[in-house]
Length: 83
Image 1 (tube, rainbow, N blue to C red):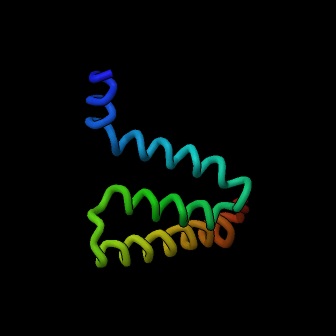
Image 2: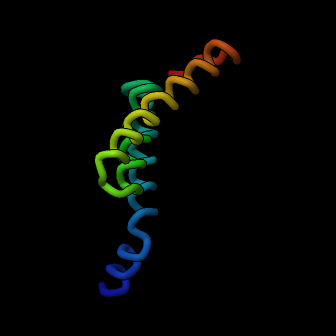
Image 3: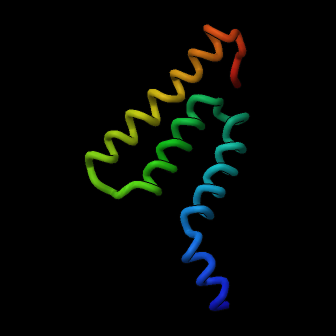
């Protein structure tokens, strides 16, 4: 029991990211690439960075711009359509 608590405490961020990634994988078929990627990135950035207003704004901007950029490159440049 103490060993499990110590492991979770020592690896908290890794466990959270794995959980978020599993949720991300499950969300892609349901809501599509863009929305699930925005939610995944925003939640990942927020869990890893300090909870300060300037970071939250930067997290939001990157979490929105990056998936749209990836989506554009795949659809317009590579002609590969994402879900």
